[in-house]
Every structure is written in structure tokens, then in C-alpha cells.
Length: 422
Ligand SMILES: C[S@@+](CC[C@H](N)C(=O)[O-])C[C@H]1O[C@@H](n2cnc3c(N)ncnc32)[C@H](O)[C@@H]1O
Image (tube, rainbow, N blue to C red; front, side, top):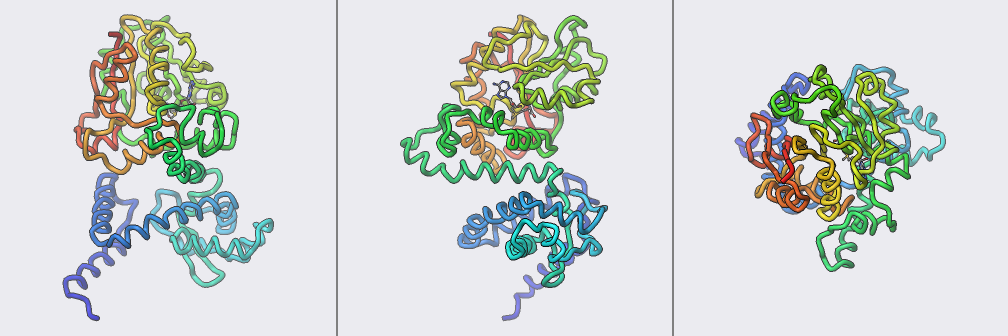
């Protein structure tokens, strides 16, 4: 049946746009807006059956990537196609980056060739590699980005491991009478893995997943938006310390990314910078030459224990408290409150959930917190009551200048909550 002329011209425009579009030439805002427009177009075209089919089969696609990662298929492809100018940021595949399935099967001789072919065929259907003919494919920037050394492969491992928890959520809720999870030691994660360990204890005792988690935490997609010290008045609020004082303690600071950035922005601000985290994480951070050369002190510390650094000018926590339900967050905050002096400030960097109209990235993160930690993403009111229950008061919510309180802004940009002693 011939197309409606309107549809014919729309198809021509869309196809021509796809042909000429050069992703790497677009700025971030334009790219984001185009993606959102494509999303809206897809949603308005899809029938309920289309949407259901797309969603129910998305797990298979994620698992195809994971199988490729675990099989080291992407490393084998990379070795076959040779060094490539292609990177995660480049926009198109290069026809010279071709490989033969038979050569990959030879390189991955520990795996059944038929299985390798099936995985490659799946990846081709996803455009992760491009099929030229039955035995012959071309790599893409995405395939190159999934080699073992890349943080993208860590993200795939982290997410597929999390599906173990997601897939048990229905049974968890049936068995607990549909109660909202509120105990980090007895929630969906413990139910799914049949363990009594907290998720962080599991990560400490399982170096493979611990390393993957730390890698994902350091990824740039987790650091979208402006750094907190670019919209918090650092000079005005934090500069009246001297060298003998502690300026900033980053509690649960991971690999020290935030402190290093803060140090390079304010290299002459007096006062010690201290990174605190669990021993297994600090051990990794201590391997960073950049961290050591910047004079940042590292300290193994469990934030349920008495805070050893008393009266620091500022205590900072970035995406730490969203890992803990109120029951445990009150204890963590209690240890900070006990250490704070009258001049101390607690700075909490987290994305805020809007009161209404939350978008997918926010609610996905909320479900991730529920599954891993029996925790939640919080609205401003929920933060206020948590701080209040911990003997602290929320004195200001700092947002990046260009950020408003609309759902889109809040999902993309972490806010900075400033709290003081009551
Ligand atoms: C979501 S990560 C955030 C890391 C870092 N602040 C960032 O934004 O990249 C949470 C951090 O809390 C740390 N953590 C978990 N339990 C802890 C505990 N009991 N004491 C100290 N740190 C802990 C983890 O090791 C991890 O580095």
C-alpha cells in the first residue's frame, strides 16, 4: 500500500537527517534535545504491544553485551581489527575495521564456535557490530568501548549483576507483605543472594564486583552537571580556616575524585583535605599518584564508628546517604553531628527527587537504591526530615545557577544540601 505523502516526506527527512548527522560535531545540549525528541517520537508511534515487546526483550540485549564482555569477545575483535581511531565519542564505524568470525573463534578457542557465532549474530542485530556477510563483520565505536579495560564493560557487569536482585523483587514483596524496604541489612539484595551481608560487605569480600562498582562510581556519566564547588560559595563559607585545621573531610569519598577536583580548583585554600572510606576502597585510592601528590590525606574509616576528625570546617558526602535507608542514615549522620563544631558545615551532594513529575533517570536510580540497599532517592522534604531526625537542620539547598526545580533539571544535576547543627 502506498504511503501517505506526508509520511513519505517525513521518512525522507528522517533518513536524510540520519545520513548527514555527525554526532561528534554536535554540542551536548543539542545532542540531548535531539535524543529526547527521538524518544518522544518513538513513544508516540509505539502501540502498547510495541512498547511491551521492546521492554520485555531489553534484558536479552543487555545480557548479549555481558556475554560478549565475559567471553572477552570485544577484546578479540579489537585485537583483530587493530588500533582504531574509533572511540566511544566517535560517531561512525570504519569499514577498514573488519573481522572474520573464523579468526575470532580461533582466538577464543575455549568457547564453542557455534556459541560465538550466535552471540556475534545477536550483537549484529543490535548494531554493536555490522554484518557484511555471513562470516565477515565490521567493528563499531561501541564494540571498541566494551573491551575489558574500559569502564563501559564494568557498567555492563554491574548492571547485569543487579538484574539478579531485580528479578527476585516480586518474590521479595510477596513474601514480605509488600512493605517498603527500610533495612539495608534485610532487604531485596539479601533476599536475592541468600546472604546476611550488606551490599558493601559483599563488595568488599568480592574483589571482582568491588572493583567493578568502584569503576562505575568513577565514570563520567555519574558526574554530569557542574561540580558542587562551582555553585556553592566556597570562598565565603570555607575560607576562614588555617593550615592546622581540617578544611574538608570527604566521607565515603571513593577514589577521591571529588577531593582531587576541589584541590585543583582551590590549590591554595588552607587546611587539610581528608578522604575517608572503607579499607578495601582506600587501598585502591592509595595507588593513585595524583591523589598522593595533591597532599590529600587518606583514612580508613567506617562511618558507623566515631568520626575521628573533630571540628572540621566541612564534612562532605556525595551520593553516600542515598545508599542508606533512614534507619541507618540517622546513625551515619549522628556520627557526623557528634564531630561537628559550631562552625562546621555538612555538605551533601545528591540528586533531589522532584515532588512530582519525576523522570526515568531519577526513578531508575530510586529502584536501584531500593534493590541494592533497601534505600531511596529523597525529595527535599524527605531530606529535611532525615536531617531533623539526626539533630541537624537543612539551612540551604544550593542548585547550579542554570538549574531550576523542574524534574529534568533535578534529574540531571546534583544539588548541594547545606546542613548545620541545630
Ligand atoms: C555510591 S559510593 C559514592 C562514592 C563517592 N562519594 C562518589 O560520589 O563517587 C558510596 C561510597 O560509600 C562507601 N561506604 C560504604 N559503606 C561505608 C562505611 N561503612 N564507611 C565508610 N564508607 C562506606 C563505599 O565504599 C563507597 O565508596
